[in-house]
Amino acid sequence: MERKDNLDLLRCLSILMVIVIHVSATHLLGNAAKMNTNFDIANFYDSISRTAVPLFVLLSGYFTLRKSKNLKMYFKKLTLGLIIPTLVWMVLYEVFEFLDTGGWNGFIQFVKDGGLWGSFDNLFLNNLGRHLWFMPMFIGLQILAPLLIFIRKQIGEVAFFILGLFFLAVGLLEAIFAFRGTDMIIANVFSCVLYLGYFMLGYSLPKTILSQLKKVIWFAFFALSTAAIYFLTNWAMENRADISFKPLYFYDYLSIVVVIAAISLFMLFTKIQIRNTGLQKISRSITPHIFFIYFVHLIILRYVT
Image (tube, rainbow, N blue to C red; front, side, top):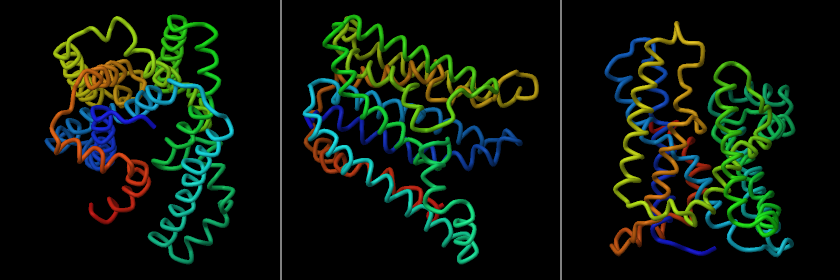
């Protein structure tokens, strides 16, 4: 895959954001009833990290949708690089859970819950699976990539960009329905449809007139939208008894404020040139291990926290 130091650094920042989200979540939920200083601190860290998942999808679209694929080689790489590791880590997390929480009794419960098939069913065909929910969605996008490249070549760049905006609007609409109690997606693997907008715009946005906006403007958009996530979440939690939607809507990866923040940070980094050799070394050394970090970090956090 083509390497770009600026976008590799954004990948590293994104995986750090994922870890921050999972660290802050416990403190956020644990202090939500009190709405105290600990809640405010957790809300701050969570708010500045909400772009993590959208950034991964935007970055993947930027690189994956650029060139046509040799389908045999592409799907072989997809199987060995993503599908098999996901299944392996799915099993490892099940083993970890029954050893950590229940020992032999946990294993018996694992068997009663369907064993390995139950785990696969939960992760791919339902919307369970802890943080691993991301992988079936991401795999779904990779499977659709050759078709999307074919469509782009047939309809042209402008129409492809507009189609990306349409799918982003679909994701925004579904998020609203979900947080009003009507979730239309029941399987993680099918949630790739909701993230198609991010995936397609990751390729298209840097090619539009929007790429001419200065870095300071994109940073301002990111800062303002991130501040909006923080204050709107705080407001929603304080008024959760009176509002008609789930109060954590503004955290959703497809809420309008997160969409603006993610696109702004992505476009900002497409315009940044990384000349510092230290940052280059850090990003180049971490980037090949991003998925391993993603897979393993919850086990480490369980014991660290």
